[in-house]
Image 1 (spheres, rainbow, N blue to C red):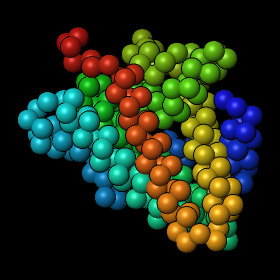
Image 2: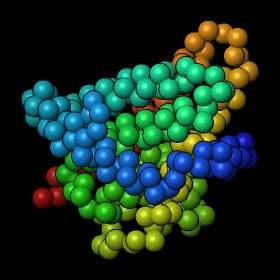
Image 3: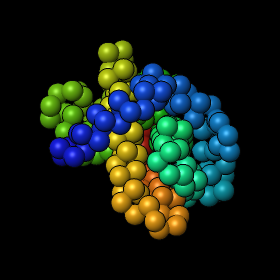
Length: 224
């Protein structure tokens, strides 16, 4: 992670104190159970699977597409306001994209044969949201013991990891949002720039998370 990314991450955690690391766990639970326009993970994954004739990989690809669009939409809406609305819109944006990405990764895990009620799998879901580069950096620094796949299939659950991973996810998402705000302020005279930046960043970020989940969470049904 570069210096600019670390600064944004640390600054974001300070300036948005109401997006607490413990709240990420609550958001994850809500995303899995279903919230707003999102049905529960089991329902969503089941519907996609049925719509694609029982083909798991086609259902997974469809989930990535639909959630990328949904993340872009919420990114557009929550980034329309100016800096005066930042205390409200930044937390809303962080929570919004977290819900969509949690729901996406958990849905992929469910289709691939993981028990999403298992705390090890839930840690893996959050680890995927950090992104491949951040995960690799954390493993190198030994702040994360192993890859999301290894976390999900670990013989034992390590409760110490719960808070650590939640804090990292919070810092990453808030930092990215703060970084977008700086870009928006640079071009604040251009109408709808904030919405466009938010839509593009959240949509692309969610697509990346989906692709990482596809690559990382191998199909466990083959082992049954």
